[in-house]
Image (tube, rainbow, N blue to C red; front, side, top):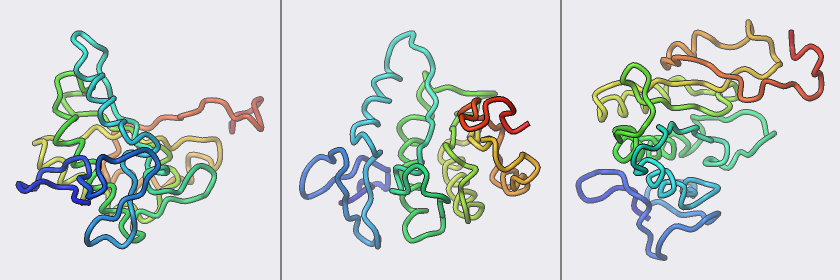
Length: 191
């Protein structure tokens, strides 16, 4: 499969076997591991574009689900962004978004910056260098930085144990608690 056209612009995978489909893995020339296209839905990029194109619609921001894209899945621990082709996969997806989504008039912005939620950022490992490099390329393409909201707060470990310096190093703008309820301890919720 190829991920860029002849001008270097990022595109949906163009594969000898045809259009990408849900759950299928694709071998990209020069990559050691296969990739999936916007897993779990092979057409999520088209659904996003359809939403953005709704006249007078509500602005949209991506919540990037890196676990599924890299095949880590829920409950399987840390997401190592330096492993194998993980940085290339993430870079392709975010450059695709930079070229096709982030500048759309209906894309959600804060202070002019496109908003990107990073799901389970609290579980990322070895992420500062890859994300810094990728975000710099996205910023160069857009002419402005992203407004990055990290999904970091669960209820363990406590907030003082998060690597806040590393989050600042990748310009995390804000944090969110994806789930405000701690199901195994609803009385204290980590307080």
